[in-house]
Length: 319
Image (tube, rainbow, N blue to C red; front, side, top):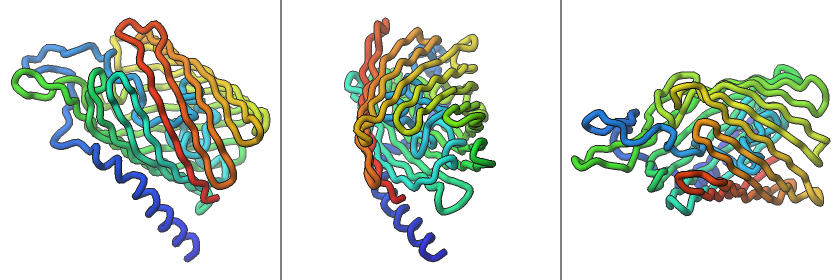
C-alpha cells in the first residue's frame, strides 16, 4: 500500500510540472457565458465558435472524430471515460496544440491510472490562448472515473469545470463573443459483445452550459480492432444546443500499427451544423515506457477560410 501511495505521489508531482504551462493561460476575472454585445445584439452566430473540443489527443484527432469506442489511456480520458478501466495502464502525458491561422495555443497534461485501484481514474488540465475565431483565454479541468463491471462492460463519468473568456471587446471595452464558466458532466458506457467489437454510448455536457463552447451532445461510436495491429472506428454525435435545430457531427478513422512501434492513422470529420469537412492524420512512436504522437487536422473548402490544426502528445508509461 505504501508503495502504491508513493508511486501515485511521484506521478502527481510529474504531472504538476507538465501542467504548469497551462496555468499561465488561466483566465483573469469573470468569464461571460453569453454571445451578446453590450447593447444585446449578437456578435457572431454561435456556429463561428471554435471548432475544436476543449481537450483532444493526437490519436483522437488523427482518427477523425475521436474513435470513442476504441480510445484507451489519455484518449479515453478525453473522449470516453468508460474505457479508462478497460485496459491496465498508468500513463502520464503532456500535450500542445497550435492553430497557425489564429495563433491559438492549447497546452496542458493528463494522468490516467487503471492499475492502483479497480476504479480507474484520470485527471487533466488544459489552458487556452488565441486570437481571430479562437480569441479565447481560459482553461478546462476534468476528473474522470471508469468502472469495469466485467471484461465486456465499462461505465464512465467525467466531471468538468470550464472557464473560457472571450478576448474580443466592443468599443466600451466590454468582453463580447462566446464564453463559458460552468461545471458540467459527461457520462458513457462501453460494451464489447464479441472480441474486438466495441460499442460506446455517450452524453457530453449533461449539465447545460448554454454556451456553444460546451454544447449538450448525445451519441455513440462503433469500432473493431484486429488485435493490436489494425482498427477501424466511427462516431456520430448530435449537437442539441448550438444551433436552432439538432445537428450531426460524425467521422471515421483507420489505425495501423507498423513495425510494432509506429501507429499510423487517417480519418475524416464532418460538422453538419457548420458545413465543415476535415481530413485528419497522425503518426507516432510507442514502446513499453514512452509514446509520442503528432496529428494534423485540415479544413476542406470551408467558406470562412480553411484552418490547419497541429497537435503533439508525449506520454510516459509508468506501467
